[in-house]
Image (cartoon, rainbow over all chains, first blue to last red):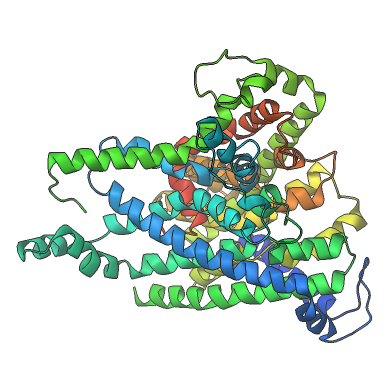
Length: 291
Length: 276
């Protein structure tokens, strides 16, 4: 009896965590999926409407804006962060003096809450008190920068703040990748007379493909989840110009009491994330078995 | 990668790296500096950088408002509470996964970790409705529980990676000597894993401190932490510019200090182990 218990104990102690995650993540997602198929408004209802909420959702102009914004924001955020991150990592890889001090500085923004980032950037970008005002005070009268108040450009200010927050962190990912490259390969290339630039382009960067993949997955899921930064920076405005799916979901349920439609937008976001992480997790477990 | 670099290039590179560093650090620096200015200096034309009369007035005003203290206390309570609770739940699970792994352990771990990537909106309704039913809306306890749950996968996984570095023979020896599981974990494993547990605590505290989606959605006035406090100052019209800077500085000060020591854990935690 005691031996039995000894054998089962390890499984038993994992169970609470396992069940908690199972219930609170997947159980609740199933409930959200159920809600998305019902006629729920302010309170959940059990009136089944099938996919009607989804058809309604995709006819909404504000959802359309949210998706377009996500596309703009997501693509720019991922591309710029990766490029900057790679550049900074290569820069730090050049035997910089006091690298141990610079690295944490690059990483600082990431340690801050998106709320703080958003608030700080709101001041910097505000034409009245921020960069524009400073430039005017310094005598550059014609300087004009009011993107944050401009419907067509406000989404790019969200990109700027997000890039500021995340670039250092992508840098850290790439730096770890660079440091992991086998020195022998580089030495061999140098003996063959390859220049520094060519070594990076032809040898090191191709070797870092897994790091690019990880960076992509991390950045993509952050982009789809983006919520607090927009809330703090623009509040989804001006108008609804910087609405993203997560802020859409929130405003549609809690200010318009359309729980069913809100739930269907949440499910669409989940599908987006799943389509990114399932292949990734799958390939990771595959690699693990081969190792 | 280490290669020979000429001195001249090294100086240029170092200068470039520092310039970028300054650029990145500038918004933080500016916020901290502004917090020491008077409201008039804060919006002065042209802006003053370093040479102004430093004042602690803003800090005094902000802390004297009793509600700031409450936001701060809520932040400490929620971040600290969810972290400690999470560790309590996670230690046994991580112990089992690290020392008595089954064939499925790795998959379960990865599966758990991947849930951290899912958008919170996917579970907002059930939790919201549950909170209404149980009267947990705008309560510190409710928020603590939610943050514990959403960070649990990361805590388990981080503890797991640290536990794995401890040789299992030590635990086995303790078991041979007749130690129960409880004393094996409490008196053998935990003392050996103190650095790892401390790192996990640190990372999770920062994550919980910064959390905004749940704090904004599940709290109103009573249980709102500092993130909600800063977000509530939505008007940038310059009226309380210096005071808001002081409040922000106080909100990020713990992070600025902890962040210096925990950057490695942050990178690991936020990349889900992609960077070791």
